[in-house]
Amino acid sequence: MQLWHDLGGMPSPEEMERRLAEEQKARDAAWDRLCSRAEELRVIDFHTHTFPEQIAARALAKLSEDSCSKPFTGGTREELQASMKEAGVDLSIVLPVVTNPEKVAHINVTAAKQNCTTDETGILSFAGIHPAAENYRVLLTVAKKLGFKGIKLHPDYYRIAFNDIRTKRILEYASELDLIVVTHAGTDIGLYPPVYCTVDMIAEVMKDVHPVKLVAAHMGGWNNWDQVAEKLAGSGVWVDTAFSIGEIQWLTPGTPKHGFRQLSDEAFVRLVYDLGVDRVLFATDSPWAEQKDYVNRISSMPFTEGEKRRIFAENAKRLLGIPAADTE
Image 1 (cartoon, rainbow, N blue to C red):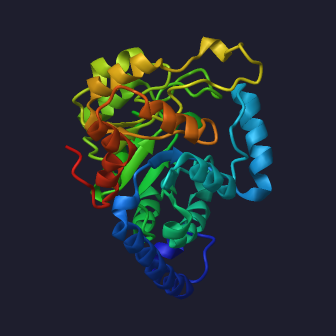
Image 2 (image 1 turned 120 degrees about the horizontal axis):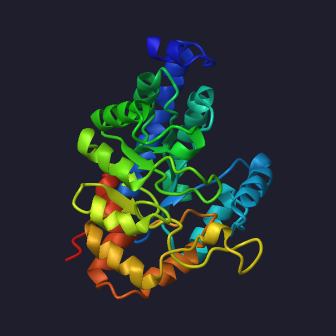
């Protein structure tokens, strides 16, 4: 009961426990139904973002201005679902970015409600967290109780380095709770410089904390890819393919911000093999990349059919605890 008192701004402990029990039954049932059709999950997008409908346009306009790039959708759950249908994506993971430690609990309770219908919507939300939250253990414990499979970190938005002790203690406790941790890695196109999650920082954390379910987004370090293979291969880290290939939709065509560019298809394939196909998760960063383009682009790359199945879905299933198929 004390758990809910510590969060602050919540209903009474008795009321929250009642709601939790009801919603947990719905979440468990939705998850069981999703897992029962695991064979139908052939494309899982491990990295997407959505915004509440009332603020989506305003939020995307600000992010677009900061990054000098244009989104491919309007950023709502409905538009993500439409994109998924067009691209043939069966499940999308939504990663909330929390910029204020006081908003963690509210954001996570709202996201947990949405997971009651994951089997119907094809959308599964992770929890958010903020390293500056003093009650991080309570927040992570509640995230686990709310049925979340993982959490999202974005060091650049916190202005707290990935190898800061506040981040390391979150990673350590998340591992104890068997939570996946997805972190933004490398340069952030809208918040540059400096870089708050460098490849060296990830390597340090892997050595010091040994998180078993850490996913370094953007192929291990956006626009820092020359260091990734050398420093992260064999470390045990997972990577996702979000916003790392294809063309950036610049606000001013042909004028890349700071000269930023994505990996060429050839460089991407080399990096996948350097890191190990079993450690790579298909992801787009929708709305900032087009799901259909990513599916088509990776489908046309010179991976074996078994390797494509692992990248598109089976690796993600293994990480999420969904029954995975034999891809050999």
